[in-house]
Length: 179
Image (cartoon, rainbow, N blue to C red; front, side):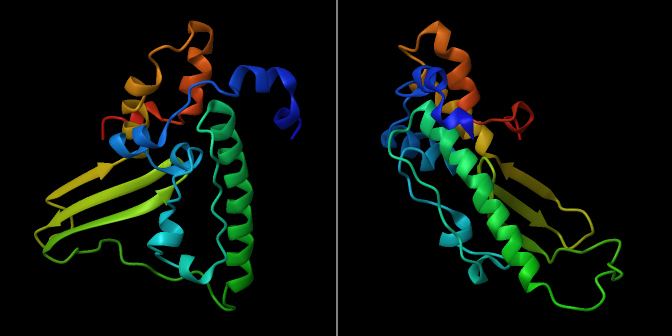
């Protein structure tokens, strides 16, 4: 895209809102924000689930940790996702895909924690079940909460004119913060 080479965009994003590796580790930041700072973690590769172990996954990394690198990592991740979707389409079995699924599922009694890679980072699910059709407890860990928390370390010293750029490049969804 043209925006990658736009001088004005680069002037407003390169070197702005740098998130260091120490901040990534301290605040538990994951996803493209962490990978833009060189933190090489992607659950689809590191702890594969579903069909990810059978796919050729390229992890997009950066080194600078600034707004521009976060944007570039997120944009490149879209291309990786498209490649993964094509690989999945190539592996689809032939035959019927319309099957009846049960209306309710009983989770076995006990507790479990599962995490998945989402577009903004790691999403965690803690489920406690008493063996009924609804969980006794369900808690979620979203990437948005950690991304917003890291702003406390990123924003001091940021120019007011760069505030919107930094906030937008931290990739958070307001509704996810309070889960």
